[in-house]
Length: 215
Image 1 (tube, rainbow, N blue to C red):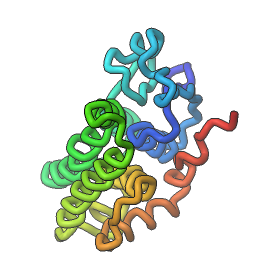
Image 2: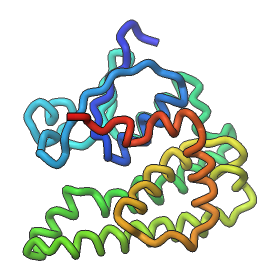
Image 3: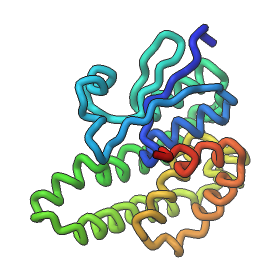
């Protein structure tokens, strides 16, 4: 590891940040964090836009690098620090990436605050529409994820018998489903896997409640 301690620019309730925290805790990294508030617009400040021109979180400073995009960060940790977040075989990698992308590239972006807030603005500030939007698209994405778990490679976790990149994506999305009241009670496979993950120390240590600012 480089001489400097890894530093994560993070919003406690951001599911992308949650993913990276899980990965860092899985590797027992000693890292520091800076809270960047999305509700107050701090993610759009000049300081943060200098870190990431998209204004998104998380941003990880590690090994003299500044990394963005949660899946790219987790794959960097996998490759450089033997993170074991992806299987060794090409077919396994493709499946785990596909599962991860269902959440990180298809479901999460549609529910990202910058998009939903714009939709809400067009709807004259109808907050009930925001809740319905979130519930609808979170459920739709996780319903597809549940079907994809009907596969011979699913084990105690999304792929096999140890947590990987897909599980790192699944747990924050289940957190979001619960937060917004999306009904996922008919998705027993993913719920069992999420429960199993949440009992692991790395997942528990990364939970949003542990990163919520106290002031």
